[in-house]
Length: 203
Image (cartoon, rainbow, N blue to C red; front, side, top):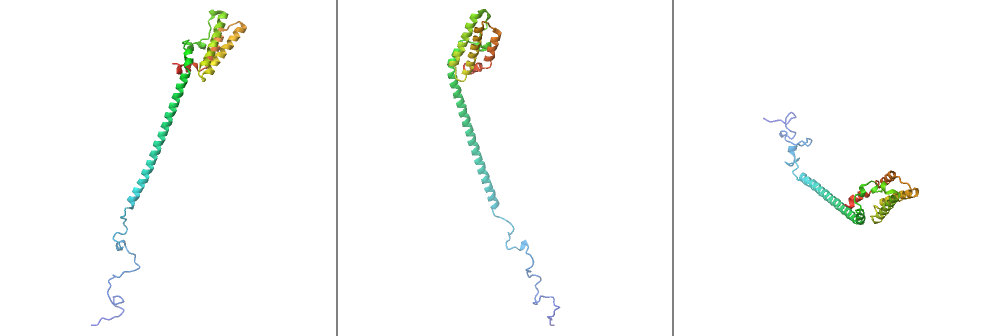
């Protein structure tokens, strides 16, 4: 029996049976048909290198920041110590310059705690005695202004000037307003820094 070669035969045009094994060039290839069995997977160490690189950058930045902070603190510390030393040295110099003033002031202990820094107001002294005491008061504060450090001299000079004004008024009028004169002198002395200066540099 002879097989025909007619068009109703179910094979391929070439006459063979390919069982659909021929590759269709139009059909997309699946991932299982890729040329490499590991295609689609990244087994490189790039992520780890990137992480190490990022960590290295962060570490360097932190190190630089730490160094800057330490240097800044060192500069502040040195500046603070230098400033403190300068202030201490200046205070020591003022105290040394106040030695003569403090020694003179100490000859009348407690005078700074009195009204008007000891302005004479004793009524039993009479006019002549009161004028003599007023002139002595004026001369004392005028001399203190000479021996005192420059910073406190204006205050001492103001006390001496007020005493001279009151003394001249009493001498010219031959009358004494003892309470009024004492209040005027106390108003002048209470505005000065003499008492605070004494506490700081004489004690």
